[in-house]
Image 1 (cartoon, rainbow, N blue to C red):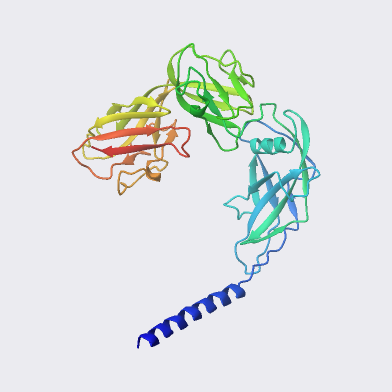
Image 2: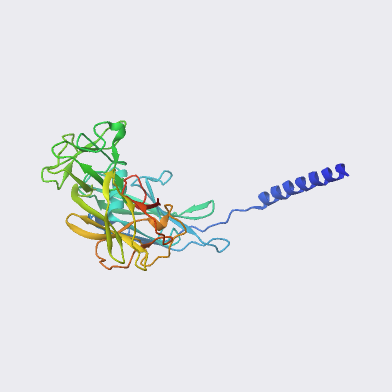
Length: 371
């Protein structure tokens, strides 16, 4: 009996293995037609790039998959004489890659121009085409076009940016330099941090092998690529924003951050800790029949709401960090209720509340911890 059971088991394993192999052999790649027409921008278009949110729309003819399934598209860029075997930059089409067009910002095109070897404020040519794909099958269009771009006169940004110096929270130890958060497009960076009056600080491109250093000019409005360093006139916690397209920088002092219960409009001040983090300990919320809350931040002398990305929310399952706890700045909304969060349960206990604008985070967030 045992022999029979073992023999049957072995037969089933062999059959499954054979069936699996057969399925693998029967698998076929889906053929995708090439994009035969590029619609816009016009071939040879002259484009003077602007340091704004302006975009250029790249559009092409639809490709067809053999199984009539969804086709994905990428816009490939190369140098004027490139053949796209190693494109210098790739941009996915709009709508998560399935549109027959892509809106590409001037700032991204400026970055591509730099990768193509075009100097700041200089004119040069970029070549582009489109690849259609379905699964592993990729079909490159035989059609190509060129655009003649004049790059921005700003400073070419580094891949990464860090803050260091005796006036910073991390001191002069390069290995502890503070990451400055890079924003979409690669030209803008920001950090929430504390600076000390009269002590120097500067921005660098690496924590181990510094090749570029950036220093703020007198007046605290612009910066240059040099190692001079700079100082602030007042101790404070600042939001520092750098824009390499214009070589500009802004400092906005954060003077207050409050936890706010929507009803009965209870406010509790959070205290700055370090590295973009604020905290209030042993907070006992007053619910008054409602459990909605958000934060008020006073930055650059102006108070604005910091709350949810959603106008309305349901209470989460627990207090652990999750997308529910992501923070969004809303400088115009002053409504007492909208874009608020909800406690997962109304309990007569206290909480530690932490707000984290740390530069190493993909999204700013907050944490509610029950005591």
